[in-house]
Image (cartoon, rainbow, N blue to C red; front, side, top):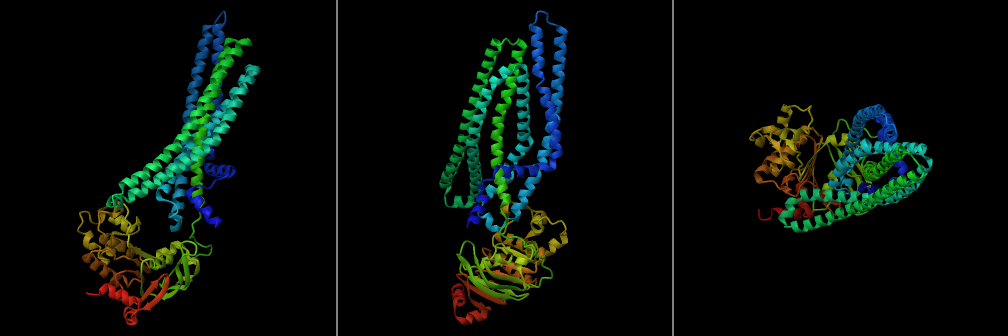
Amino acid sequence: MAVMVDEKDRLKGDKKIPLGEFVKRVAGYLKPEIGRFILAGILILINVGLDVVLPLITAAVTDNLSSDTPVLSYVILMAVVYLLICAINNVFLYFESMILQKAGQEIIYNLRIEVFSHIEGMSLSQFTEMPVGSLVTRVTSYTQSMSDMFTNVIISVIRNLLTVVSVYVIMYVINWKLASLMLISVALIFVSSLIFSKYVSGAFKRERQAISDLNAFMNETLSGMKTIKLFNRQKGKLDEFDEKNNTMRQSRFNVIKGFGIYRPFVTLVYISTMAMIFWFGIKMGLSAGSIVAFYLYTGRFFNPVQQLADQLNQIQKARSASERLFNLLDVKPEVRDLPDAVDLTDVKGRIEFKNVWFAYEGENWILRDVSFVIEPGQTCAFVGATGAGKTTILGLIVRNYEIQKGQILIDGMDIKHIKIKSLRHAVGQMLQDVFLFSGTIKTNITLHDESITDEEIKAACKYVNADTFIEKLPEQYEDAVANRGENFSQGQRQLLSFARTVLHKPSILILDEATANIDTETEALIQESLEKMRSIGTMLIVAHRLSTIQHSDQIIVLQNGEIIERGTHQELLSHHSYYWKLYKLQFEGK
């Protein structure tokens, strides 16, 4: 139970990652680009070194101009040197920025690929624990936050720390007493930064969760907009949106409130420090140049400190985003290949369930001690009321879920010892809810497999009667498919699904309510297609219309997850039992 809770926390992004482990994981992404980061680090050292020299030049010019005999040529020389240093500094800044951006984009590119590949490998049951909108946020927004951390924040923090240390050392050399007084300001900022960091860390985590929740809600609402309008639920959904939007606003306000207190406090300390420098500098008898140098160095000292506050903001955002990404990457697929898994070759199509028990959660059994055998080339239909376990059986054959007890065998081999990719390649699935991608008819049939020829596509479409409507379209196989195939009827989408399945040459066919919600004309085409597809291999059918399964070699009747009858259509009718009652209900009066 603890493991399940832990996995759910990871899916939601709520699992806290210790700082040491977090740093180690981030370093792992930096390693391939370490050469670029080292080069950028060298450029930063040069940049900081040149930058901290500039106030000394200003101080020297100030002392020269405030002396009784100022030397104009010296001032001009210092101005030229100052200009050259600034120009060189900007050149170094340009190359440093280009190097860091290149390194950062390479890291984020690879990270996005890793996250997307991981999502593709997750089990179907895990997608029910995580809304689609939340996944989209992690792949796009959260990786961008990490990109900012790699390309800007980390290097800026290093630059600012080097600047602060370098500036303080020079100030200490100019006048150690005045520099020592500044430690009071440093201590105040250090303590306030620690308090601020602790507060803003929690605030950012809550903000990220609010953003993820809002995105998930938006995704679900837009996907179900037709249902919302049909039932006039716009007001209710608006109220839900308002609640989530308000949560996000409040979480963002809490972040702003923290910065609203911290930044003015740092500014107040800065102004107080400047006043202290002028007061004590004059009292200690420092030259005008030295006081000007202290003034400029104090600005160079506090500017990085204030920037560190902003960078701390970005680091906390990036850490919160990174934790949610790492949590996702740490989720292990519930269904995965065993070490000894092998490819399924020369598939005959014999399917056997041995005392199979299955539940989606706990011991709420969907299937109870189910056993049956389907011989190669047979057509087997599953019949029963909604929730009897028909669709579950079909999903278990392709390992969408793992069974708790028993065995499922294909050609005598336990499917747990078959590689998932090989298993699903051997099984063609045609479902009631056909999903079509944006693109063309051709790309939806081939699923972008460039090895499939146009002749093979046309042959598959002709085989399942899909050519009857495709060839009437303006662009035929290049005709556009809108979002989820909304520009085609349910029957047309189903025929495209049949063509897609046949083209990939499966040895076992699964039809789950594939003929539901189809008009009479299209149903005739589909029935003709089904008759042809029976010759492909073993076929498993779930259908409420008993007319579509009368010629099956075997019909299995399920009730509450158990097999209560089995046999051919005529055998089951002769029993005058559950199947006979279903048949009588459907055909009475016809």
